[in-house]
Structures are given as C-alpha cells and as structure tokens.
Image (cartoon, rainbow, N blue to C red; front, side):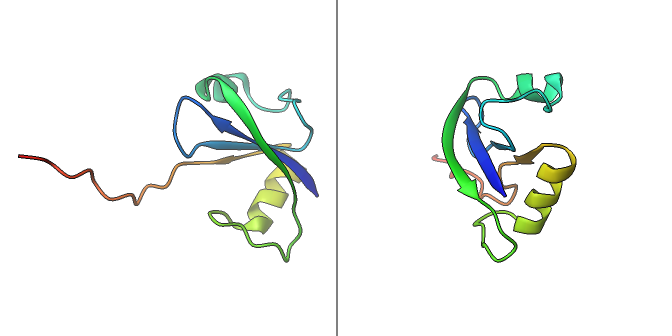
Length: 85
C-alpha cells in the first residue's frame, strides 16, 4: 500500500500519513487544522513485512484502509530538558 507522509511544521515529530497525495479530504477538519502548516516528506510503500522506526506497520495500514489517514504522534518518553543553574 502506497502512502504519503507529511510533517507538521508547528509541532516537532508530528506526522500525517494519507492514502492519496495532497488529498486531505478524509482528515477531520479540526485535526487537519491542529497540524498547522505541513511539509511533504516522502511517499512510502507499506507492506506487512516492512519495519517502521516508530509505528507498527499493521496499525498504519489498517488506519489508512479504514480512515484514509494515520497520525504519528510525537514520542512521550523524551527526557526532560536539562536545567541550567
């Protein structure tokens, strides 16, 4: 399954995968607006055997088939910034 990946320029590590290039019609308006300005990153062929760095490929494929999009959220386990005293 071919998908198209966009990154939010508003929030680091926030990505939107869609099933048709530049077609955001299946993405709910509030969600789409929360991304702010986006930049196309790449197109990617997804298969069950393919490994993704941050997501379960089956979960992404299922979401694309059912909803037409998938949101990759920023990681929540980032270390806290160092405090300089």
